[in-house]
Length: 413
Ligand SMILES: [Zn+2]
Picture (spheres, rainbow, N blue to C red):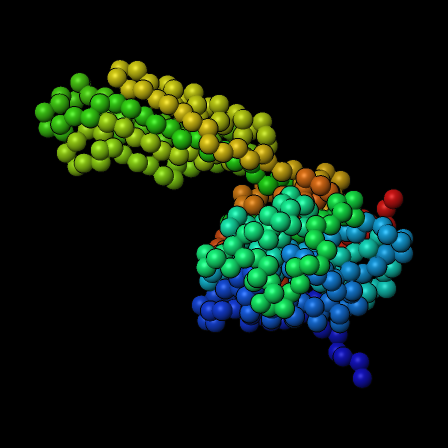
């Protein structure tokens, strides 16, 4: 007897609920660390669904999981759809799994609608995006794409000294399976992720089409003045390092707002020396974290920040600026973005362009292949907590948009 037709939205809800069961902290959010018992349970669930959807299941030597729908052209590169399935400790049910489940449902729609693609469609569920167990994060995509070598992967240890390969073997995975894949074997990568911010919900828009994963730079600013007695040094005779530093810090939001385009500036760490209640601060060191979606905007806000910092020097105040970190913004592929936009329009789904302020596996893929990324609203803008929630109806919309887009990407020359 034929099962009654269950809507896409309900199927997505069922998958989300099922995946949320695989947690080491029941009732206190999703804790699913890479190569843990919960990882094993979750991947078994995903494998079962993949097989049920007619996909060929495969794992690589890093524990990444693939479910492939073969294309009619032999040996042709695949369109990958998916995300990661690990979580932070006490995280939510959506960060990662929403994207993996979206991939599964795109594949199911291919099957149910009788679509036989030219190029293969591959659902991918990646390990260790969050860096919750092993250091660094984005480990699954970096290893898969050869950004780190198999030997480097094998040398990574968790805080208890257990290596990746030992942890893999402990849950029955085989680290000797083929490792990084030929980049020419990937035609495109599509990732759905929850927004993890407030914009879509506030504007009542169900879909964000990601333009770029922001670039970031961090500088350390040291402001030197003269320490002195808080009672005996007249107010007009001071070189107060904290007062000077404050002028810089207070000016940063204004610089970022003036530049626009989602540029943000944050001072998150500040050290005051000697840090005594009755001592004029002699030296202040603080970090400035600057992020923007376009390379020229990162450069511009950096130049403005350096100019602002230098402007408080003089009258006994010295300022030193040290650049510490620079990560280039990753633009999503224009062609794929165009396909996502036209699919949204055909489906009557409203969308807006967005930048991603957080890193994702998509940023690793963007160096090697065409990447498209969608966001769905996060309730209250929350993520990495048990309260994390997104509407399955929005995920279903994203699945339909990806289906349309993947249909084109698996057909076009
Ligand atoms: Zn994520």
